[in-house]
Image (cartoon, rainbow, N blue to C red; front, side, top):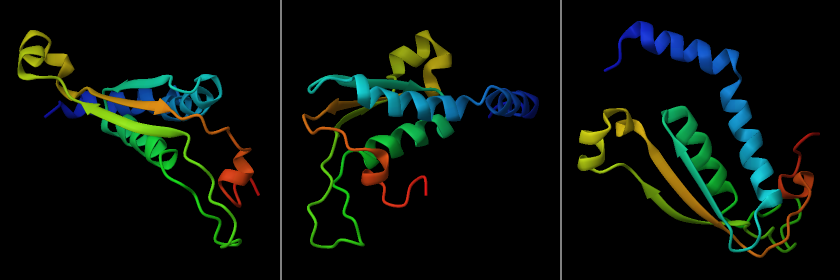
Length: 125
């Protein structure tokens, strides 16, 4: 594993730079600029980053139902999850720092975006 000091300074850096919040904002912004058929490709090097990317893709890859309006049509999915790729043995041997990398790929569907308050009932309220 990593040296405890390395992990501590990494945690400080992530917190001080608000890296996880920046990642979340960048992912949300990507939906607005990706054209249908466009690919979202994210490489993360830390499990916290990968979890955010994974949850973002999962959230936007399934239909969302409003429990308050059970007969309403579900909100459509905006992304289709395609791949999760980790470096191979050859890559890790050539570049040991790549061992923790995870690349996730998703494709933008042709469904129009809805305002956040419609997609996530109660959000921002």
